[in-house]
Length: 164
Ligand code: UDP
Ligand code: MG
Image (cartoon, rainbow, N blue to C red; front, side):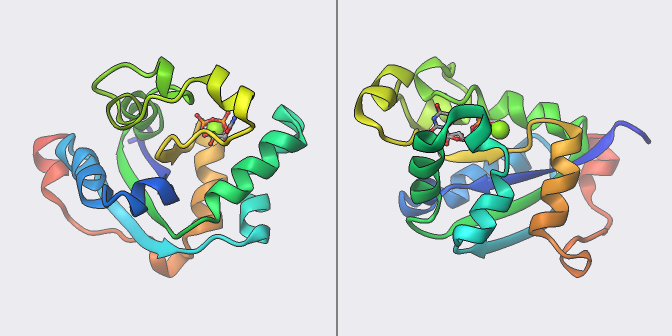
């Protein structure tokens, strides 16, 4: 069962504040992904640094600081999702980083529209609603960062019977 993966999703503070939690969780359940961990959390500077440990070296201090402020502006909802090639499938569902490039039908394309140019010109973080692990390695690191062993669940679901 090598293709069954677990991946981390965060509903970012803009998604939670906009009251989109239920609709976004629904989209993941609708495709048959199984919720094996879920909680609400206020990120602090330490968790932000550990979650986005390589963001500053990838994009510079300006992007890191704007993103850190954005991620701490209110609580997030963390989800651990399980399914067939869950990492790639969830990335496909959320769309690319900049909502202005994200196709309709993706979460970032359906619930936002901000462009990269606008974010760069204003120094604003991209309010793009969701985080999802970008690779299997990232998913392993992030699952352990966000969910303790007693917060990760195994239970029989209908998805294994009808979806995978
Ligand atoms: N980010 C940003 N501006 C950038 C690059 C990244 O605001 O130019 C923020 C944005 O919230 C993004 C997060 O940093 O979702 C992580 O960046 P990454 O490249 O990993 O994008 P993702 O994996 O979230 O699509
Ligand atoms: Mg990423």
